Every structure is written in C-alpha cells, then in structure tokens.
Image 1 (tube, rainbow, N blue to C red):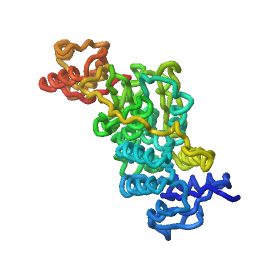
Image 2: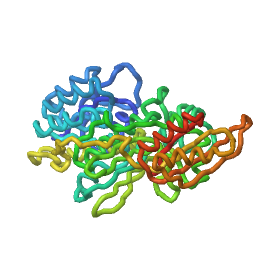
Image 3: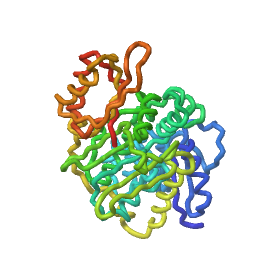
Length: 417
C-alpha cells in the first residue's frame, strides 16, 4: 500500500513486541524503525530496522508517529519533547512520565498541533481514556475509583483465597511473572498513583500535582486483616480514588475495606477496574486485563489507528483528545479527609481495655460502629477489631497516638470504602 503511516517504536520488550505482532493485521501501518537497548538480543518479532539510539527515531523526517513503550523518565521525556517539536504525533504507555511531566508535554503538543494519545498508560487493555473524552464527555464527575494494578490485586486475592502471608503471595507472584524482582513500584502504590493522577486530570479537568497524592501500599496487610475483613463482610483492595471535595480534589491511593456488595470487591487476581460516578450517567464501571503483552498492545494499536484514520485528512487530528485546561487542582490533604476505619489492635486482656479504646475514640469525636474481640493469645494479650463510623483522618490519628501512649499496639489502620 502507498502512503502508509510510518511508525517509530521506542521499546521492544513485552508491550512493544505485542504491538509489532498486532500491527501485522493492519497493512496501512508500517513500523519503520524500532529502538532497543541491545541490538544483539534474540527476539520473537522482526521489524524493518533496529537502532540503539532512540533519537534517530524522533529526528527521522519520514516517521509520522512515535510510539513510546519503554517507560521511565530518562530519556523518554527528552525523546517525546523532541518528537513533538518535530511535529510527530505521540502514542505512549508511560504512566510515570504523564503523571510527572504530562502538563509540559500537552502544552508543547498544542503549540505544535500534534496529538498525544495514552490509552495504555492507565488501565492496560481497558478502554477508559477515549470513552471519557468522547462518549462520556458530557458528564460532570463526582468520583473516579478503581483497582489499577494487577500485581497487588493478584497478591491480595491469593492472600484471601489461600489464607497465607503477604510475603508468601509476593514470592508466588514473582515466580509466575506477575511481580518484578523489585516489586516496589507495584506493592508500594507508585504505579497506581501515576495512573490515578492521569485519570483525575481528565475527569476533573484540572492538573494534578502527583507529589501531593497520598500513597500507601499493601506491604502492611496481614493474613489476619484479610480474614477479619472477610468475617465483617469486606474484601481488602488497593484502591485509587479521586473525588470532588467541595471544590478541592481528594486524590489518594491506599488499601481499603470494600463491601462484598460493591462490584469492585469482585474484581480478583490480575484484573483491573475503573468506576466513574457523575451526572448524568450515574455510575459506570469498566473492567478487564490491566496489563500484559496483548491487552496493553490493544490499547496502543487502538491509539495508532485513531491517528491513522485522520492523518493527512484534516489540519487538527483528534481535537477532543487534546488537553486544553491549565488550572492546577487544589488537592485535599489526607488529614482533611473523612472516612470510616478498620483498626486492628493488640491490647492486654484486662478489665476495662475496651473502655480505654472507647474513651480514646470518644475524646476525639469518633463513634464506634462495632467491636470484635478475637480471642486471647498465649502472652495474655487480646486481638481486638474496631470499625468506626465516618470521622476525620486527623481525629483518628490523634486517637491512635493516645492508644499507643497507653501501651496499646495498633497493628493496622485501614480505611473503609
């Protein structure tokens, strides 16, 4: 075919290979060059030519679209800035780059009249960016929440199903390839944080400062927490949340107890889900595979084909996808949020200990919804579970400090969705 759309691919790992395999079904697209770190590495895909200098791609006048699936900030940020200045359209799966430098890239893209598409950067194979920017464009959003990391969801699901520890499940996830050798980005919530930053940006039409997002991972979740939550009618999930808070935007990532009546609680193993709540649509939820070679390639190729459909036919490609807002959001500090809480406590099995807990809560304007004592240990301590009614984060933290000052051990504090 003549007048093929010519692609420069930066990154030929799992996702990049999936893109190459998928694009074989679309003869109107040509991958001219792919940039890799190691030219001699054996691969199960072939492209026209390889380079170990990605700047060759972004400076190649024959390339129309730069597809970046390598990840990281350096050199991706400079590469994409250079590509935009050279008037090349961008497709990227780089959630960290968008969360940290998206504002600059989008402004630069508008200046040079090119599109930046990033469907794969938030929920892998789940279509969410384009629906928000097109079919759901008429909504005013109140909340976006979901499970945006398959590794952590897999670990928590396995802890629930097998009744074993976080460390045991992490090892199993690493053996299966679901978790990296260094899992920090996933299990400490960084990956999810980058994704919710982008989702909050486009749902609330305000720019999000990723450094102000409260982040907490799953490394402190115990098998006991999973078991007690189950007994109380909940599952524990790592939740990404962005919601309107009287003109501010409350954006955070942390584990939450999710009621078994909530459909998000049924999203298990490596699946992801995004729930949107707004007017006039009400609540809608998207779910599917959030990562992997072909699910992510599906989103990348979808973006490439969206550009191809309009390339050379109009002056401004995909205007609805452009970022035209510049106002920075006022983000809510976690201490100013209101939640209900699960508190796991180890305390002396002594007369009046429940009263001590109730007194600390009462002094800090916290109503207790339920208290469960889970038996006495051999060392004479009792395991106590408290569920509070909705109260302020600041008040619950003050109550925790007061209890700790009275030699009451707080095993875990988890917010309730």
